[in-house]
Length: 607
Image 1 (cartoon, helix red, strand yellow):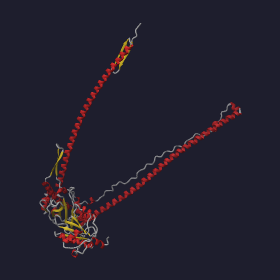
Image 2 (cartoon, helix red, strand yellow):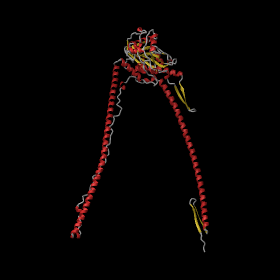
Image 3 (cartoon, helix red, strand yellow):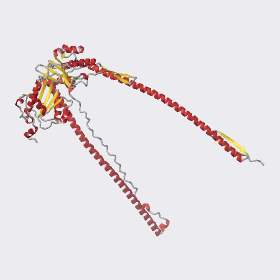
Image 4 (cartoon, rainbow, N blue to C red):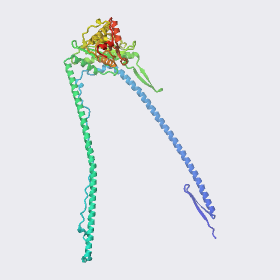
């Protein structure tokens, strides 16, 4: 008898192996097959593990390579960034140096800057012809609403006809009446059913159509109402905007016409040789002159038509207005900027040169612009407002003065002159070192005459200890202030004038102090008050001082001042004298009086 042979095929797809295991013992064959599977599985695991480890090593190597590459790229980027940063810092230093040099060069070329410019006023250039620059409002278009279309009215087939339900006669129907009657009844019933169904369908379809039309109509109506409302609102807003725009345009055009007309009037007055117009013209010439921003460029003018002399009191820059920076270098090792400055000697030299150039330039601009030949001569007084190092206070000092005839000045070729030598050759007065701020007396000063000044009278001699200054007539009080300050200023050659009666505010008196250092025009206001003087009165005085071009303001009252008033005058050229100060001033000049606020209030009916 033949023996039974057992066979099992074992396969591992991952390893790509297979094997046929044979044997006569089924159990042994199966055991061998399982052992083979386990062996191949272990081989596959080890192979996969090695493959995974290999992939990990490759991935790590690639990551390390990428990291090194990224580090290299980052280093290159950082190197480039630092290079750019250094270049920017170097460029910044160069730019600052160039700016500093340009500033110095501009000051050194103050005179030459104006020689290529026609300084005569271009009257038409002063006028404005610019159209109104606000855009005309537009009426916003509102699109019509998209209305829903009504559905078409349904169409229906013809109504069922009785003839359509005629029974077909059978032989029995033709022969037997009852059959015929039954056929007719059945046909009639069918016709009625069809007619009812037709009518029901028509009514239902028409009802649905009407409902759809109602819904669409309501929606369309709402859209139309909203459209009309939006359209109306938009139109109302447009009407308001257009009305405002039209009004502003008209106002702009009216102002433009008026301003242009004023220019024509000034031009006509100038060519008619009106002295006021000539002064205004000269002021326009100097105002049009461009200087560095930190230069004061303030001035006072007076034209004397009887002599043809123009007197100019010109505010010159201070020594501290001069640039000091000369160069900026970038130090790479410390990544910092090193600044180099002009020496004190260089700054002083630059300052003196600039002042002489400003003087010649001012004369040149005024004479060149004088197309009427109204200026026979110009007297230019240059003053500087700066901190006095000995007192720490701001002082205004006249440091140069020059008088030049036009016929003499126009012969000079300013492009080739040495400014200082030219100034001296024209008999200009000033210290050899202008930066030293040595005060000089002006050759000719602006007239102290003021149309507001009225004849004064003395009051102080009538005073005694019985006179209450707080209840004194206000006009007598103002003249008393003029008199006592006149005595105060007369010691230095000054004088005080009373202006037209003002009762309160404004200019009550003007003092003129000839001292070239601390002197000038001084505004004095007298307040015969019985109540504390508030800060508003002090503000008004400061505004008057600025408006009058005065060097100082003094407020005198019979009462006293609040703390706000004293805080306000800090750092300003203002002095506050109360009742006690006034009595002291009177006593200083040999006069007696008293101040009794309560008594004054009773006499004036105050409570």
